[in-house]
Length: 254
Image 1 (cartoon, rainbow, N blue to C red):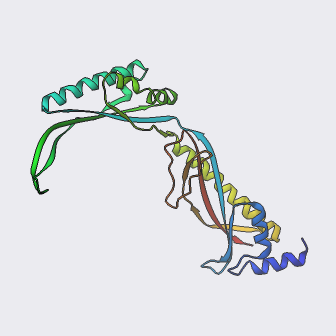
Image 2: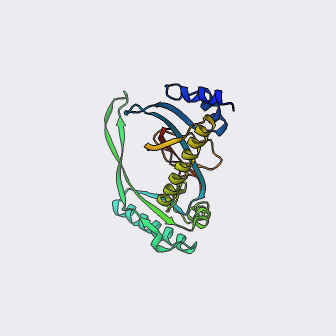
């Protein structure tokens, strides 16, 4: 790069538009945002955004399901539901789930009615049908593969007469705070390196750091087509995930 071209680039860094040489360099660097402007002290500044991401595997699974009973008698509905609870617990323990990992919700019993209409189609009241008793169970475990397998084997409960409705497992990472800190460090380092490279190519150098801003922390499924969100994406449906974050740094230009 000639001295004349470098001089031209430096003269343009003080304007709102990014100098041509800086834009070309930023494009070569990849997905980076660079802006040249003047700060409150009327000094030339440059702002660069760096990014860091890391693939990781979830280490906690949460799986829930529910079962229900219907009866014309309140006590009978409750009794049948308790029998289903005992069968469900026995099934899970037999599959290797620890009792401390199993949580049953309180029993929900609802009165069921239906509307009654006359021969002209006018609603005349309601008719009592019976009671529906519902209870859910949640398993929280670090043995992800085991819980995954059990969630696909609930037909064993159906064969025992338990009307079990299984939800999809949700996957989490218990060391997310540490991962976020590591990514912030890497994103800041990436932004700093981009800034130094851009200014070096333009014949300048960075001064003191005047401002830093953290972008949105995102967690998406690996190899998925999930879209990034301004509010942050938190994927819980994939066992294998990718975490990413951006950091914007603003420096004085020497």
